[in-house]
Structures are given as structure tokens and as C-alpha cells.
Image 1 (spheres, rainbow, N blue to C red):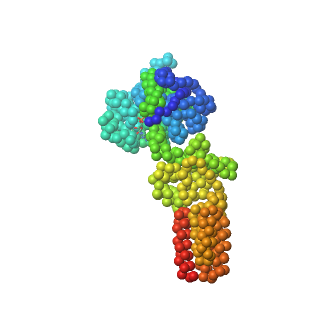
Image 2: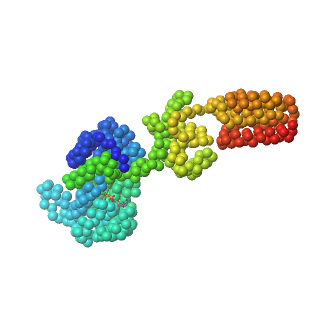
Image 3: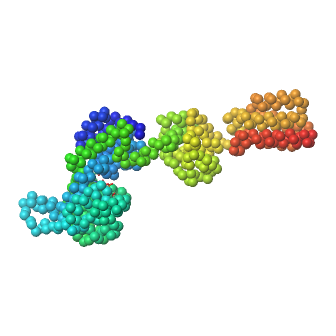
Length: 558
Ligand SMILES: NC(=O)C1=CN([C@@H]2O[C@H](COP(=O)(O)OP(=O)(O)OC[C@H]3O[C@@H](n4cnc5c(N)ncnc54)[C@H](O)[C@@H]3O)[C@@H](O)[C@H]2O)C=CC1
Ligand SMILES: O=C(O)C(=O)COP(=O)(O)O
């Protein structure tokens, strides 16, 4: 892995001091600025190569967009749901977490909430502080022999299971990824959620927050639970739907909830926090000195290792970024950058532009992606190149400039980035995106290309052959020879054509039998415009073939 240069890091939350110390010992300048507003962070972030956060800093796409130098977002903790990982990946920013540093602390708090729920410890403590001695009100229930449902059997789920087993609880669970045989080894019997809900006295969730886990416990699932079930959420707010939970608490379907996390933190809606059967904490799962020391040290060491090129431990988007760094992807990135440079130049108002596609600084905002060749429109040139090329795909880049959009398609053929289409014009031959390129937008017509590109060898050869054939049957050898040499060496195509027609007419007037020659000459005259044929060599072959035919037929007739 190539080393990544990180000179300065911003720490935007209360991270253990060992993080700063380790980074500074390794030559990285660290600035700590806590409680920044989003606007502050947007204006600050461009000054740093790295950002270290916990769960409070919301690293949104607009912050990442403003972070022109950012290479790493370090999360001193587990959940990265406060970081827009997709936006970071798009910008080539590595997102790294320390997933095991706070496992034990989060698992312990979960167990504390379960035990507290069973004996109403926080409520009893509050009533004591209020000067009461209420022994009846806080009648509890043993955990021994009760069933705990663990949804999400990863690091924390596993630790919770072993701890609660020591209280004599039966542990059942559900996890779509961790195999049943594995969790059976920890004493957790896995089953479907439908089977799990009605068996549990307590349910605790330990999944990441994502679309499939949002509202895992909702009105429907509460309805399937035992009446009086107690629930704990030390994972992420929203895995237990907050409105459903409140309804279940009010109806008595749920006898109590232990909440460390909320959809909005701190929660503005206090209905749950204020409910008498809810015990809650201000997101304290990882708030132990041990967890913070581990997470702070881990994130610093992981960043240092990355800077030294030793590895990318904890990078949650490493797979995507690693594929970005492979050689094949590099070719596609070069292609995308070169196409961006071409489009940028074409989008400028100049009538014609010279661009250097290898200058990636010219590159505009571009969306580059490989699409499977089967999605390539069935236009002959692109389709055939996509099949013939070593890489079966095209890269499509579109830019918006001055209210209009301009598109290009390219591909990588034999390791070389090539342009296949620009602004709706499909290139018959792929254009290698290297060196300096000149693009001219002209209306198609027989005269345009030769007049722009100058004499093509095939044009001259066709015309000179046609003329020399005509001359061979009508004029003395000395004139034939000199005209033929003159035409083949130095005339422009348009002039060749005029001469060709003129001579053809002359021949026509001198002998009726050369009608054939005239028609062939006229067809040869059109060769320069026949760039609709696949290649110049094809034109040349036809030209030679027809010329020979004329030769043969002329000797037959005359
Ligand atoms: N309250 C706090 O301060 C802390 C909270 N956390 C949070 O705890 C949660 C769990 O953390 P870890 O155990 O370290 O994560 P992990 O990644 O080790 O485990 C998560 C498990 O959830 C499972 N899962 C995914 N989708 C699921 C679904 N639809 N149903 C059931 N299981 C599903 C995964 O297969 C995985 O086994 C995370 O959301 C993390 O952010 C972690 C540390 C501290
Ligand atoms: O690690 C996690 O997922 C946590 O939720 C801990 O968050 P924190 O670092 O305490 O803000």
C-alpha cells in the first residue's frame, strides 16, 4: 500500500488525550476544536488532512465536499452512521473506526440496563434521594430462568450473552450473518424473529442502524411479544421505533425500557425519557476511561500505520478504495480524468480548443462509472469496440456547463484510455486520450474532411490512378507519365477531382467507348468523400481494384 501523507488532523470531539499524543509523536500536527457548528466545520475542514470524531459530529456530504485536503476520517468508536461513508468514498476519503475498543463497555452498560430494569434501581435511587422509603413500589423480578432475546450477535451481542448467562438467563437470538453453529458455541440459540418475539422476557438490540434494522421493533413486533416484555437499546436510536415503544409502554405491552441512544441526541421529544418505566442514559455506552483510552489510542495508531504505508486497519470503505488503487481501476480513473479534461475544454466557449488530457488538474466535476458492455447502446462502433476490447465496459462522463450538458463515452482498450463518443458524435476509430488533441465540430460533407485534414494518401492515389488509367488510353505516353506523377505527388484532393473530371470529359468526347472510364473516374472522384467506409485502406483497395478493371476493360474496348 502506498503511504498517504497526513500532516494535520482536527479532533472535533472529546477523544482521549493519548490520541493527540500518539499522532504528534509521529509528526502529525493536531488541533482540538470541540463543539464546532456545522458551518464552523465546513469552513475549518479544508485546512486539515484528517478528522477524528466520535458520535456527535455529523460528517455530512457538504462537510466532505468542502474538505479539499481530507484523506481520512477517523472514528474513535464503533458506529460510523454519523459519517456519510458514501460521500467519503466518492471523494477517496478513508473512513476508519475502532470497532472493538468499546465493546466491553457497551456490553456492560447493556447488562446494567437489563439488571436495572428487573429491579427498578434508578427509580428506587431517585425516590431515596427524594427522601422516600418505598419498598412496595419497587417490587422486581429475578433474571434467573428468564429468556433474553439478543437481536444482532456481533461483538457486543456476544459479550452481553455470556454475561447474562451468568445470571441464569436463557439466551436466544437472531443475526442474518453470524452462523447458528457459531452462536450455539456461545450458548445462544438462533431462530427467526417471528419465533423469537413471543419467547422473550427481555429483548436487547445490537445491530448497526441501517434501513433493514430501522424500526426492527415496531407496533407489529411489539404485538407479537409477551405482555410485559422489557427492552434495551444500547446500539442506535431508531432500531426500536420510538413512537411504537411509547405506545407499548402506555398500553403495558412493554413493562420497561432501558435506552442509551435516541433518534435525535439529545432528544427534544422527552416523552420516552420522562416515562416512569423508562431508564435512560445520555449515550454512555462507550463512556468509560478504558474504552476511551483504547479507542483514542487505536485510532491514532491506525492512522499512523496508514501514513507509514503499513496497513489500513479499521477502514470501513477499504474494499471500495482498495479496488480504486488497483492497476485496472487506475486506467479507468485516468480515462475518467482525461475525459473530464476533454469535456472541460470543449465546454469552454472557444470555437476550437487544444487540451492535454494527461493534465488532470483541468478535470471538472465528473461522474465516472463503469457500465457493463451489454448496456452500451447498440451503435455499431461502440458495441464492437466494447466486445473487442480487453475491458468490457465504457465510461460515461457528463458535465453541466452554462445550462447545457455535454457527454462523452470512453473505454480502456489494451490498457490505453480512448474516447469513443463526444457530444453525440461517435468516432469511427477510438481516439487515444494522450498528448494534445484538437477537436473540431463540423457538419458532415464530402468536402469538409479533406479540406481540414489536407491530402490523404488514399485520395491522391485513387485520383492519380484513375487519371493515369484514363490517360493510358487517350494521350501520348510522355504526357500520361508527367500528369500522373504530378497528380500523385503534389495536388490537393479538390484539384485532383477537378482534373479528374476534366480529363474524363475530354476522354468522353474523344471516344464513346470510354464511357466506362468516365463512370469509373467519377466514382473515383467521390472516393475522398467516402470516409463512411470503415477505413482508408478499404478505399484504397477499391480504388486500385476499379482502376485495374478500367485498365483491363479499356484494353478490351480500344
Ligand atoms: N451506545 C454506545 O455507546 C455504543 C453503541 N455501539 C453500537 O452497538 C451496535 C453493535 O456494535 P457491535 O456489536 O460492535 O457491531 P458488530 O458489527 O460486531 O455486530 C453487529 C451485528 O448485527 C448484525 N446484524 C446486521 N443486520 C441485522 C439485522 N437486520 N438483524 C439482526 N442482526 C443484524 C450483524 O450481522 C452483526 O453480527 C452498533 O450499532 C454500534 O454503533 C457500539 C459501541 C458503543
Ligand atoms: O462507538 C459507538 O458506536 C458509540 O456509539 C460510542 O459513541 P461515542 O464515541 O461515545 O460518541
